[in-house]
Image (cartoon, rainbow, N blue to C red; front, side, top):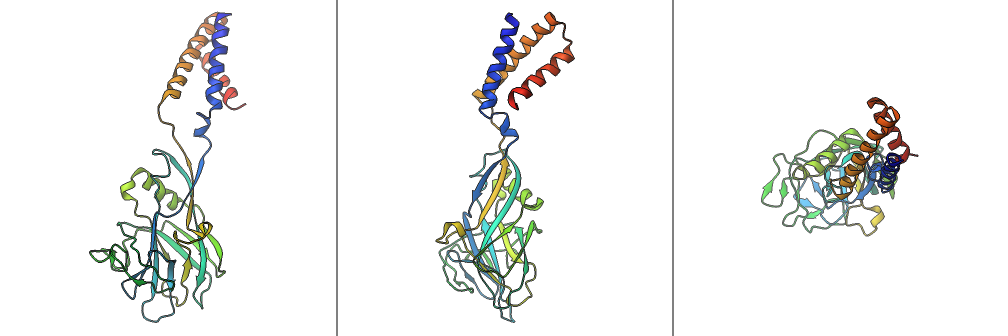
Length: 283
């Protein structure tokens, strides 16, 4: 009778812990939405920037270089618990405008390899305006003191791509892809390596395929760039885990007594424990 009481007590405590979600947190992912901490646009034909205005990517109608690229950085480490597992990542961009001759175009995201800045430049047009101190430009990571290693930005291989149509005032999404997940996981595990993404058109030679997207400063919060991240948090050791350890010790001792009294083998005891735990946590 005493051993049965111990088993029931341990089972009750274990059920209470499971009801708090300590175990199910390993199974069910959390979702967080993050807008850029900084974003900017750079322009190949000049040293302009557009820190507080819209984001531009693609090429304008000029025969001479008229390439636009957007830079976006998100605070991953400040939004997701350290040690979490990233399950999926998607990016939503709200298209405000397009070039007159724009057609359906593939755009790419590349991880940036160097830090860069957002000053106070702000323009309403697609050519930006004079950069301010600390702005990213085509030639500078931080205007006007720190140049890129390569003009146009220092970026790595493609992490993800999406097809962007020609409909304006529409949300377009970069669906979750292994490269995007790998980038965000790396930025969470190594925050010092988080320089964000560069957005660029796959074809930067096609005239008038430029796009205008809402930036993090857009007055309409719903139109701002947003990444949706599904992650699984790994609980840190604490009082609840100590309680779990106590429960399993008590549970194991109770089963050990029951094994002797009821004739269970060690293998049967282990199997019984698993069955009981599973039925309590996942009824």
